[in-house]
Length: 90
Figure 1 (cartoon, rainbow, N blue to C red):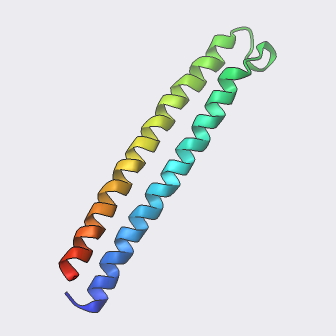
Figure 2: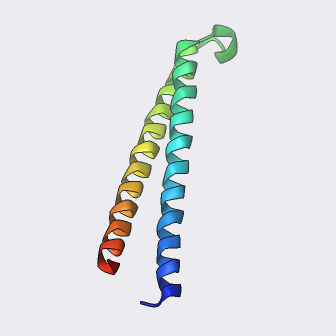
């Protein structure tokens, strides 16, 4: 593999790691927002049925948790692949 190809491969792994990190941050921010929404249920903000606001927040929390888990898997896979590439080159 040429040096240019090596640089491109490492760049791809780094981009995947950065995307995974961004996904984790987005998911964690969403979880914090969802938790706050559940903790501060307000009749005025959610209309006559405050359960609908809680339901939306709980569904959002499940989605955000899935995003964090998926992003962690992407990060782990990218890290392992990059480690394998470095081991091969060493």
